[in-house]
Length: 215
Image (cartoon, helix red, strand yellow):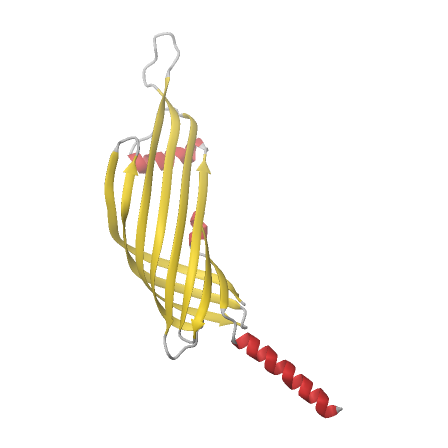
């Protein structure tokens, strides 16, 4: 009876240890862009001992109608304030998609440890200012007219990234994954109301911290 009990406990422990050591899926959220209102989600799948693939997307949908906050944004964007504006509204939308390949250094076993990651990310960004601005001069009857001020711009970019990071797995369940790396972004920039269309490109620094679960 005692031997059967010990054998049963051994089998339970072995199965449990095997399942813990062979967790190949991670679901994560990027903690850094949350502070700017962008929510980025990632799914990582282990392919073998040294590599994995990660898919992700990010979304943001921000609206500001407070006049004082709108004026600050408008001043920063156009280097001037609006004269006694009303019906102010600012909207900002962001959508991202990414696919990353991760190679974990041979001293580690995926998904733990130091890795290098070539990655491509698609970014779509839209920004819109809308307000009615009071004319500086009246119409002679003590009343003032308001003119519509509207500006909208859009970016559609591809971001080629070269990242290095470290993924720590805590208690076989919680993942902590800081990363950093440069990238080259290129694509189109469009200002609808100034009718300026141009190519957008440049070097970008990518920094983030993923928090998630390993299952």
